[in-house]
Amino acid sequence: PAITFIHSDGRSDRVDVSDGESAMQAATRQGLDGILAECGGNAMCATCHVYVDDGWLSRLPAMAGDEDALLDGAAAERRPASRLSCQIKVTPELDGLVLRLPERQV
Ligand code: FES
Image (tube, rainbow, N blue to C red; front, side, top):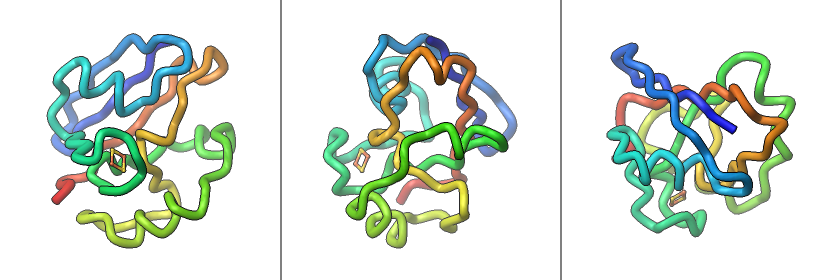
């Protein structure tokens, strides 16, 4: 599958993702700025915060409690579409997913 990240300045990057890889892993592998992922994907840092684009949120599995709690401490404003990209496992059904990057992660 491939997913698209839209930066806060409007640039976009389309990234190929291996089946089962997280959106954060795909972004950091590509060296995308905008995702820091300081904790390496362990749901401990909230520096992989993204806003899921319209229409996609309901197609993602529900978030776990630790993700929900961490998002409250994200550097950028938390919105209804906020998720941690390290907790989004990209499956073939999510091909075409669009994630918007917040203005800052720290
Ligand atoms: Fe740290 Fe996602 S990488 S919470």
